[in-house]
Image (cartoon, rainbow, N blue to C red; front, side, top):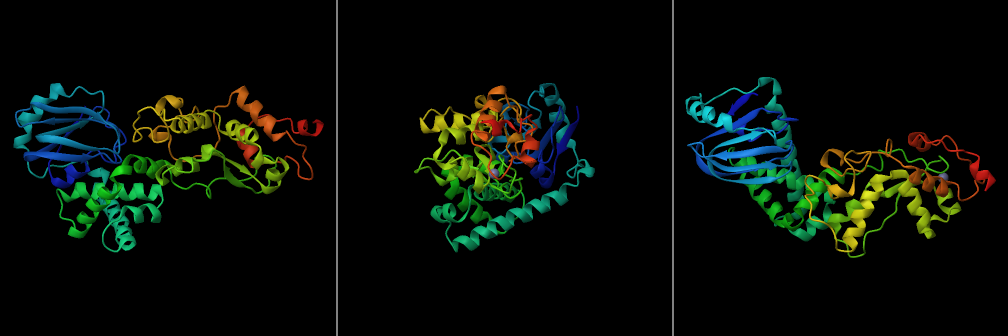
Length: 375
Ligand SMILES: [Zn+2]
């Protein structure tokens, strides 16, 4: 266990940001006076936050996930530590040591905090500059919804929150602070969806291999499930996820009559993505039937935790597994394989043969390539 004190405003502003895991370290924020405080846990691992008054009485004690604003009551000390750490034996030490600490304490200098910090600040300010240019004055929700995609709006919102956190201890240009408030106000109804999109909704199509999964020739990724016609723009990124798409060429689309054959589409996407498509499908159905369970999209951006397994391969929608990834390594059962073979070989291969499709190699399944010829 290491006990670290954060005394200066810049140390406090950084806190647990950039630390992969607090383990059982205690970060203690020491303030000169009692005041209510807002913390933002962007980039933080899940952590326990504890607020103490000057006498060491506990005013707040909660485990907080990443990407959250946390409002603390008027307090003198704030402790951040791992979710399971028992901080109580150390409260006495904190209270007795803190007032005597020099006002410029030292943190682990090897972290190079200030470089990271200024890079992030510069990025946040650049985001807000885009807002100012897009709106020419007042921030209007309809312009925000039309001009920017959900993942961009999520990043802009995070930047605004980040700047507001800093504005409490640092002097930032007044325009940036005003604009940050205006953005958060305009986006308030969509915040959770946008923050989820900022991680999970980033574009991927041009980064992934897109060879046709049937014949291996150049193709493109085609989404399968369609959003309801009246779906809000904030959730459309969920239908753009790789788990809802298959790479297929024009030729095979025609040969399979794919656009008019919904069971075939489902076989292909289900077979390719296995439990990851199942989880997305459960989200899609639950939303359609108004049966979505209450869940925290900041911790599980993709779908409620009970819809998928514990790992990426098994369909987890957790933050750690939310960035778009190609289908390599998905846990496929015999049912998935059967569906895949059924769809890939339901029509005779004419002219084009199932070749050395890079995607088929990725899938690493044992297809009998002549099976289609005997049908
Ligand atoms: Zn093809």
